[in-house]
Length: 327
Image (cartoon, rainbow, N blue to C red; front, side, top):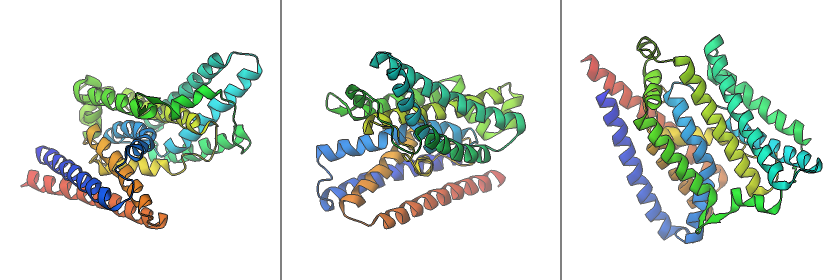
């Protein structure tokens, strides 16, 4: 275990150095990369996915996975827009209508995630299967409630949640930082966080030590779905509509950021700070390639190679640690 942790810290240090080198290279080769507006744009772009990535880190450390987060973002945004439109038509003041719509979307998001966790524990169905089904169902539901067309019913001030600034910093970026701090404290300094690591490392040992495995699994699935719903709300605020086609493919990018950040797909190992670096790394990489007019197709290739490399490095470090323990 000590060697595995050492491998994790080594990978994270390398990633931080690579990120620094990448920023320097792009500053000299990508026009406009180092400008304040572009850097703030990168921060805004990574924030909504990053919030979900922190929740996904908890899920993967616990030994599970969630493939439905992209569809959950779209559904939450559409549900918020549709409910706002209905409540405004019913005569509710705009602030009350928006507040009720947002709370409803967050509640549905959290409940959906908890249901996924419950099915996992009750019927022993892998979350890979349940969330794959949910990914399709939620995307379909988003199209159903909007009839396939963007729903625009928000007051102008609603845009602040996705497009506003506080002291020159994008509001989503501030939420991103706050969530990072909260989840870091939760994972590093609380009993709940330690229980997540224990469950992901060895379920049976965690159960025998008195940890409520069912509760842990259900809560982490609920948290990541809650974060996806909140990102969906901010996404709808940024584009000022509920659109069923948004966040397509987000689940893969989010999982990629978590893996690149050093979290093990086998569970039990990872850090939220690593995910933070992984999210920023991918955001900077994509932004730099876009500024350098690199084909979008090549961008997909590069990201694919990065994900595979991160998995292979993770696997190699685990194998080395296992050999050392056996020896």
